[in-house]
Each structure stands twice: as C-alpha cells, then as structure tokens.
Amino acid sequence: MAPIIQVFGVSVQAGPLAILIGFLAGLWLSSRLAASRRLDGGAINDAGFYGAIAGLIAARAGYVLVHWPAYAVEPLSALMPSLSALLPWTGWPAGLAVAGWIVWRKGIARAELLDVLAPGIALLAIGLAAAALLNGDTLGQPTTLPWAVTLWGESRHPVPVYELAALVVIVLGCVRLLGWDLPPGAVALAALAAYAFARVGIDGFRADAPLLAGLRVTQLAGTVIGAASLWMFGELLASPGPEIEHGPRTDS
Amino acid sequence: MRRLALLAILIGGAWTWISRPAAHEAVAGSPAARVGGLAPDFTLPALDDGRPVRLADYRGRVVVINFWATWCPPCRVEMPALQQAQRAMPDAVVLAVNQQEAADAVSRFVREQQLDLPIVLDMTGDVNRLYRVRALPTTYFVDSDGVIRDIVYGGPLTRALIESKVSSMR
Image (tube, rainbow over all chains, first blue to last red):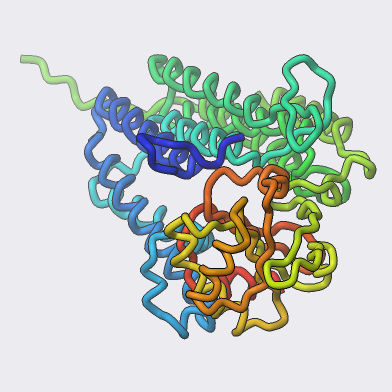
C-alpha cells in the first residue's frame, strides 16, 4: 500500500497516476488496433481526450452544484485543482456523451469499434485495480495462504492482484481474438463475459463488497451480465453473416 | 451457447452463495485508516494545556483529522481554511494533529496565525504510523459513527471543500 509516491522528489498520488497511465495505455492500444482494422485511430484518441476533459469538468461542476452552500462563500475555490471534489454521476455521463458524439460524427460508431475498445478499456481497468492496490481500498478476506498480504494487521487475499491478473489475461485474449475472423461485436461481448465472470470469482474473496440479502451485489450482477454476454456472443456467432448482394452477372 | 449461459448462471450463482460472507466476517467494525474503516482511536496531549484528547470522546460528531506540521507549506496555507470551516460548523470537530514538532515551535506558529483550533501533539509519531500517513498534509473525514468516509491526500484544502465533505456526512 503506497497512496503517495515520490517522483523526482515530488509527492504524487499513486492511485490517480496509475489510473492516468491505464487510460493513456488503453487509448494508445485501442487506436493502434483501430488502425489495423481500418478504423480511424485518431478519432478514438480525440474521443478519449475530449471525453476525459469534458468528464472532469462535468464532475467538478456537478460537485460544486451539489455542495453549492459551501462553495457560495468562496466560489473561486471551485477552480482549485483537486481530485477530491469530483462527482462521478455527472462526470461519467458527460465524458461518455462527448466521446460518443465524436465517434458518431467521425462515422466509426460501429460494432467493430467496441471490439477495438475492449482491450483498451481492460487496460484502463488495470489502472483502476492498481490504484485500489496502491490505496489499500479493496479489502480481501482473511487467509493463511502463502501469497496473502498483511493489511490492517491481518493476512488477507490480495484481491486487486487477482483482478490485475485476470485483466492482463483479458487484454491478451482480446488482442488474440481480434486476429480471428469473428463477427463485429464478438470480441467486445467475449471481453465483457470474461470480466463479469472474473468478478464473480474474485469478489468471492472480498471482504468489503456491498451486500444484497447477504450476497455480494457485484457477484450477482456479474453472473447476470456474464451469462447474458455469453448468450449474445453465441447468438452472434450463430447468426448468418451480412448478406452480399449479388448483382446481375454481366458477360462481356 | 444457450446451455453454456445457463451453466454459467448455475456455477456463478453457486459460487456467489458458497462464498457469501458470514456475519462474523463483516469488516465495518474493524479499525483501519481506510475509507469505510473505523477510525483507529488515539489519545494525544492538547497543545494549549497538555490535557489528554481522545478521538473516541468525539463519537456522535463529525471529526476532521488533519495531519500537519509547521514546516509543510501546504499545511500552513490550509490552516486558516480549517479554522474558518470549524467556525462555520461548530457541530463538527476539526482536530489538527501536529507531527513530531516541539510544542514551542507549534505554539509560536499558532500565535502568529491566530489559530484557535483544537491542536494535539503526536510527538512520538505513533498516531502517524497508526494512520499510515505518507505525506503531509493528509486529512481524514470521520462520520458521527467513527467511520472514515473520505481521505484527502495533500493540500492545501479550501474551506469550501472541507465544508462540502463535512456536510455530505451529516
């Protein structure tokens, strides 16, 4: 656990740095894969960059509006650079809306886009899991296994490490599947199913997951999402490919 | 593939049931200086009169625990904001935990800045280690049940940020 690290003598928050690295690496990978599939990789970079900017602005604006009585006293403090004053519920939708608008305008809003985004999003998830590991946010169940980590005075399952390992496998699997002749959208569905089932398995070792009727919400959601993705993946593979219109044969 | 999806539901459901946490495994009540953990209790001498100040005595009130030192520039900058927030929210407690400095130096700084916050002295660094403070300033926002709801690493904090964090815990 190291929420603060020293970079060239400067204290840096390790969690946000890990998320930033994951985001940039994911953007780079997706744009590279897009180019190899004749999609506009530059448009993906634009969507990621402007989506992130819009998301951050909306997240700050949302936070300030929700806590306006506090900010009304000193409105200029709304401009202070701080990662602690962000509201995800306004940031994520705004960021995704701007990114979606850019890819729609560039004409690449197709199922193939989801396929090349899947490994990039998995890299971003690696950054998020690394941030959880560095911040000590995710708490595993107590265990005596040899690879246990000592956290808050007890040996526990290193849950973020499990998640990191699963995500690395998903990234590599996605890149491999993209080389296969699969229908558009199949790689994205496979990645979603794999991640959902990984969460079902891994979260069984978590000690701090939210509960619903005594069961972990993430495991319940993962089971439903994973099974639905798997079913859709199967339907996609079974469906006939796009029909090719055969024009009248012209004999010269 | 439909059969495989059904099998996945069965296996996923079974593992969800088998791995469900037992009641005694709940971690909400265990002390840990992390978001969602119970703020570890401590007792430290007050700067002004040396009387012991215990964190648990503030149970029932929102507590802002600020780890700081006079040699830390952002700590010095945010002290007035902490004081203003304390005055604006008298039902909450802002507890400034000074890190391993001589009482004289801290008193001089407090006089210069005209601070009247509750300041305690962590002269041995034990509370610093208990909370695993890696950089100054670090601020913990503890709700009225003694559970840490937010941690802000670094600074300087603004009065608005402090008040917004406290108001979201009420």
